[in-house]
Length: 428
Ligand code: PHE
Image (tube, rainbow, N blue to C red; front, top):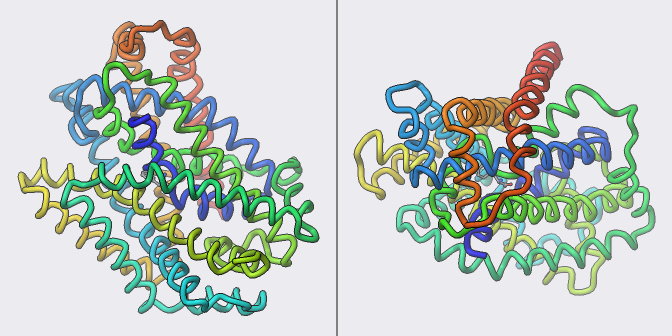
């Protein structure tokens, strides 16, 4: 349970509740969902297992795991790429965490109570277009992340989140029921689960792969680092499947709340990164004890965002500690101040925010994932990989399938989607 909880703490975050619904909405609904499920099962889970195995085999975080297995080679650059990816993600992730924190305060204070639908939309636009407020709330979240990382108390946070995350889950379940009962709610559900293949584009495929990587925190070394904490007795394949299932469930249920509301309240599903924030207050306003629900929901989401943000900053701090030979505290301060600088750029410009969001999930993470699997099949012997995946003492029956996926399917699929996606993106 410990290992699953820790890795799930990194995986479940704003990626599930904020990013997933908005990308689904932009990319045509259920077709995206279908691709997302396929990619998660066939591409992302094998990658997560590979990252866990490399981390556990070396006992080292991503910044040194690859150079240990291939000393003197350039493979250590996977660690540098992972660090840069983490760096860019933190810079915009904490802006959204800041919005979430602001919404918790607004819910507790009753500012969202009985707002009409257009007023809910205005409430968000006035926040997102006000750099001053965005920066203040981002700084609060970034500081909270830095404090946790500097003190090395991530374990403590995970203990709390083991209780709080199931609570978030239950809350979302209640919201699903309420959302389905809204007039028009079922049309929203249909948009989310009934594929319309005419909406399938290169972009949908590209985004679905990126979202799967982002949501599972793979392709940049977070899971390699978590792998180094895994005990020998832990079953890597079932840990990866558990983490991916929990992560998927949270994302799926978030979609099952958002889309019925989007249709019931006449919101544009392609609204973009504000989608969750312009949708949810409307449903809380229609629920008994809505203010309490809303306050709990946004606060729990802040905790989920914090555990993910901590896992991101850990990657950067580990790199700074090692490369510049500095202590944990100094490394944390330096890392967070640098992230703050990039965070400011994202707060001041929507375009920069969007670029960071797209480039990290759709470009940097697939490249990282591709390098990790190529490394695994060329630099680690097949039998050594099998030994690592079976270290807990039981045979891994699907090993041949796993190896086939990692050796052929994963690199080819990522390669094709990546090249097509970039071409489509550049020619847009
Ligand atoms: N997976 C996290 C989320 O869904 C974000 C994240 C990405 C965390 C990469 C760590 C590494 O919110």
